Length: 404
Ligand SMILES: [Zn+2]
Image: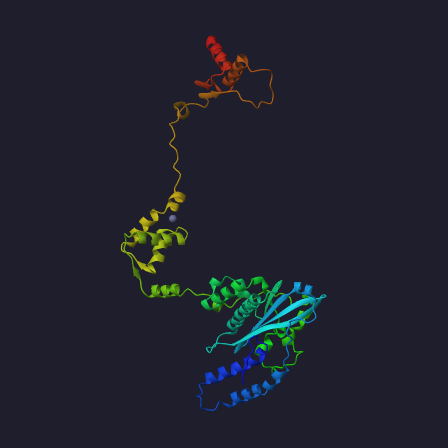
């Protein structure tokens, strides 16, 4: 038996042969040994379908009787899916012929999963890689202008991975996501419910592959024949599984090591100073006791307290923010202000001030003299009277001196 199917037209049939060969290989059976009953049953089931391959008739051109202008609306739809044993990608062209959508199978590709089992999300991701590569080769080998590309997957995890930073994930996921994003645009990826995902038919046996020309595999999923508004709605990607996130092993090893052994550090090395300052800053510019306590859990420094104190002293932040303002030195008070054992108003200051409620003309020497007299009548004569060098005060002073 010879099978030549470079476009994967009957990939939904051949994949089950590949799965069977892998299963036989995995069982470790030798060339001359009979295969187990279950695999024999699978083989019988598969080979029985082979004669039906004659029914497969594929038209030479994608769309017969089309109007050339309808190719202006050409879209490429790639569906991907994976199961435990295999993954599949299948591509369709879609055009609008007189506003009526038409679909045609372009190519399909299937692969068995590696011998070492891997998780379903990883398989789904591999199917997405397969779909991206298939899309790239279809675009390269056709001279037709494709106006829009769609990639459909039923895995929300894959959708989440494609939208996250690939560097955050382990190599397996990171490399594959990077490859997918180099071949396709993230906005070309759409979610499709599993029951509408046509790539599902490429991997699951179900009732067995059928080769009738009206089968969905050859004509595309039904929803593609509807207006785009009725296609499955874009779903928000779920949280990507955390077990694929990259773990910093070095760090974990280091902390485990440190928990067991105390590290001895020299007291006057610049690195020691930096280490102390790191702890000091980590705990919000902590005091000596806190830094000592935290350091002692992992390190031993000879003359630790003095070393830590010295290092903290060199912290510029602390110097600036912990500095106390120095109070300026005051000149000694003049003698009359502090003179003891004299009655009040012995030394009196004199001045005029603005906010008077009643004002009768300008204040002159006479009014000043009167005010002083009233003051003396009330409080007794002052020993010294201070005032500024105003003209009315000078006049009053002169007059008072003359009167005396
Ligand atoms: Zn500090």
